[in-house]
Length: 395
Image (cartoon, rainbow, N blue to C red):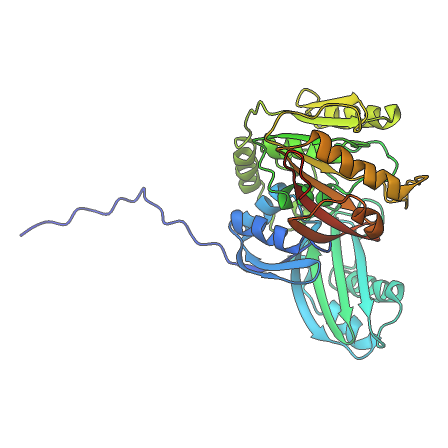
């Protein structure tokens, strides 16, 4: 009779981690870009909403997403949803949550609220009621309450109310994810880092061709491009995420994921060129690149778009010229007409992408677009249009 071999006790079946619902917030117009990013790192049940993408995740993915997503602003974990017709129901429902299973009493917290509809009209008052409910939960159970910190809280709790529909969520990110850590000094009209990364991803930039921003300002587009080219995760420079203060934080798992993220880095020999006529803005750009460890990866230089020669094809131009909004221009329509003429004259064989909040001025470019996306730069509705350029022909 054949004897069975004893089971190998060294083999362990990896226990599947529980999955839960998550919401990634983003800027208007970048939802599909973020959804693609999420799928690429293992997000399941991905569904696009307005300025948000819904998905399911496990703990591993929450850590990975905070480190690697370029177009997400925050990653929220909904913990309770209910209906509240008045402040007493709101208070009691919030107090009924087992907060001590989520974070320790020595952690500081902050409530962020979004309200819409006739039931709860004052977001500040909603925040106070929810703060009292959480503090009273701990005080009733431990005779002690956690402190509120409006500047650098350990725990951030989001309360979203639509009419009488209330969703309570834990913010896994803390500071918005567009705060990469390289923008230490304030610039005039800086481009949001998530918007810059989203523009590059929309433009199909993969870090394997030369890129130029000929009106680079403080350099956000160039820095985000260099990060894509070298596969630098946008969260690698951060040393603090809100999930690190959750009770279930797995420091060992996060260390493994962070190390794997570092190991994705690659060397690239492509050129990223930032050009501007503003010496002060270029100094800010160079300092930001240095803070990001990318001072050798980007060529920032004083130069005039209308005079300097572009890199050889195939190269991509991504540009955010003035719209006559935050930065004033004497003759905005002439500026855009000159941009179109320069593209036709000097950029044959390349693609150009231009972001602008001045629709009438964009018509003056005189080039046929092959793709256009509607984005928001702060509160300014913008168009992000792509152009293919051929010798002697406007397309």
